Length: 177
Image (cartoon, rainbow, N blue to C red; front, top):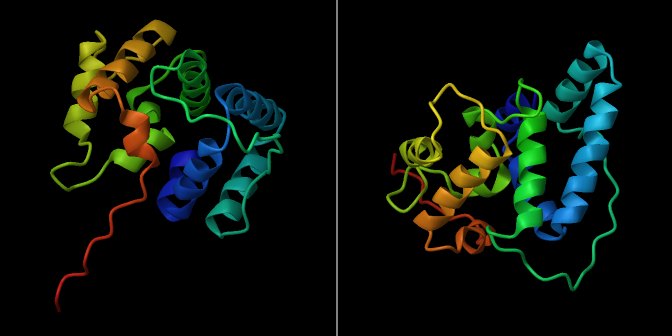
């Protein structure tokens, strides 16, 4: 469902990035846990309606979390951030308690860095980080392997991946017609 929503409405990723930038890892985990509990209690038809509603631009469920305005920015090696991202990616995966490569690729910090430009994060680089963690492309990661893959990506950015992920998207010029 979340991949479908993101593909149909690219602003969902931007909104998620903006919201995550203002939240501490504990708040992200709290929001993720709350959303997961809400979704587990929903009937499949209700989940479909929510996806359709989000695609149509009406938005999905709103999770209210108190955000400290002066909270320091987190780096990619912050344990609470890694924990929160694991919980989010596991919720997006079809295997309970594990993270698939596809869910890993959809995490907002990774999404913000992906692209076709030479400096952008490529699918091959993400797959290489996954392999560095000792995972096959079709394998699901437990918390330890997820952390190894996450830190391998951080190394590509000289340990400042979250700084890069927070930067505004690069604007590209439309091709001449």
